[in-house]
Amino acid sequence: MSTIPPVSREMLTWIGDYPILRNRTVAISLFAVATISVGLVGLLLIGLAVGDGNYEFVAQLLKIIGGIWLGFLLMLFGIGAVFFGGKMPMEVIIDERGVIQIQRSDRAKFANRAAMIGGLLVGGARGFTAAGAGMLAASRESEGFEYGDLRVVRGNARTGEIRLKDDWHTVMQIFAPAEHYDEAMRRIESGIAEAGESRLARTDIPSATKVLVSLGAVIFGAFLLAGFPLSIPIPGLLILVAITIATIVIRPEWRPIFGWVTAALVAVGVVMAFQVAPPMLSEPGAGLVLGIQLLALGLFLLFGVCAGLGVFNLQTGGRGTRS
Image 1: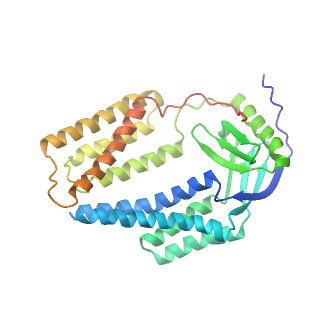
Image 2 (image 1 turned 90 degrees about the vertical axis):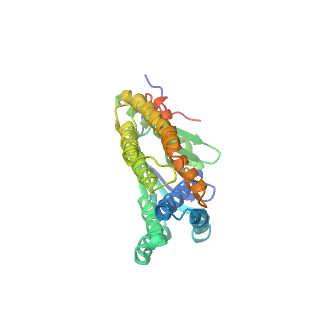
Image 3 (image 1 turned 60 degrees about the horizontal axis):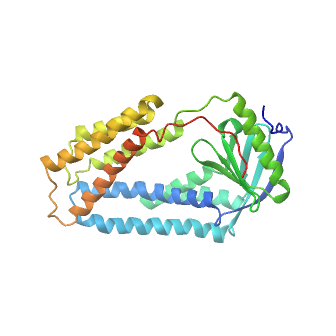
């Protein structure tokens, strides 16, 4: 029997300032927005340059992409510091079903929509990057999780920070004022504990994670097809991408087998490619391009080894704990 008292059916709510610059979750989100937005465009540009055989330009292109990424990231943090004063007003609602967090900043909503509209009107790589950032930010204006979707809650009474986690990572971070912190932690702990009594243990990767990793496999697979110095047959690369995706979506008990097959396919393919048709590195920039290709192949190898070791197979879900 659980010793945690049942969650109250009365709603607990407050509106408070959500720190932006000192917030780890926000910083990670901004980093992800900048990296995904700029990275996808950069990956396409590198692929086009390599496809034209312009290896020498890749080094300069990497510097340009890196500069755009850094500038875009600093711009996002600068907007948070100047436009919003380093804080974001957020409303938090805790009830018998779960936790909801709603953005209460008209400035933020206006900026998100302006980024989307302006980016689409401008067009081009930078325009679509801004539009993508606006859409990602708009999707976070209101978010909520039911207790059945959560596994662990961690709190820091000194800062008022409360982090809600699923099997994998922190999915929401809220800040409770001192007068609400203890009650908020109690309610969330109780809700997770009650939901856990009827919740089946999750043993597989969440579907959203599968979709994102599968998309990454397709993108990197297409990237590797762009005529790199190391000649790997296109059918072999297609098989690599296919078996990687199969490793992601397969039943958990089969995932280690598929993972080791993925790792073996990468290792054998690279060794055979070096033996059958060693890359010609006499052309300027070819060595750098080969390094990028091997790095991408290394990600497939790392994924296969981790899947083979069972890293991605979830264990039974835990209950809320307080720290």
